[in-house]
Image (cartoon, rainbow, N blue to C red; front, side):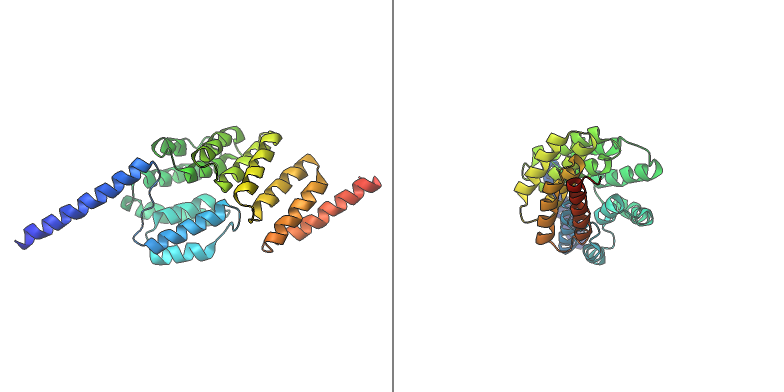
Length: 262
């Protein structure tokens, strides 16, 4: 009798998990598999901070997520994708690989894409992520990641992914941000300007939209406008501690133009 009860319980749990998987599949987004809801919250916070340009390395969020779930594949994969440090990329990728058998097919594809990227650093297509995108058509964060990975190496393809992210969510601020930089690298400055204006519309109290648009103004030689935007960004967020030096440099350029010493 006890064996029958245990089998029934296992069957019920299995059915419940299948329903959850089916629900996620129906949403057409990459699942976030974790044993801890709090770990998931830290992952989502870290993703927001990184993708919105607020904190490129939110170590506190990373650490808390992993402390709560040491087998958190999505967290390891995210770090391996966005870290600027090659050794940290590789270390976290190895951890993601170690536990990838515990997660969904889509998350395994993320890990495989990172494996390919690390082994083929000159690749400019991210074909494996675009393949995953075919299964996750409504995952704006995935399209952001593709745009982020390609906006320097292949801006025209990055634009394709970036445009998809804001089609999914027209108020996705960080989607407009990375798309704007892809447009800059593709010499489509009017479209970049529009993208950054939309970023400001979505997140007017965030410093990063103003900082991003200022970068475009600098590229166009509009130093007066760039100065105002940089000052606005720093006013909103003093953690953007590189801005005072940039402001001083912009002021020096403006003075040189006025005096003709350029």
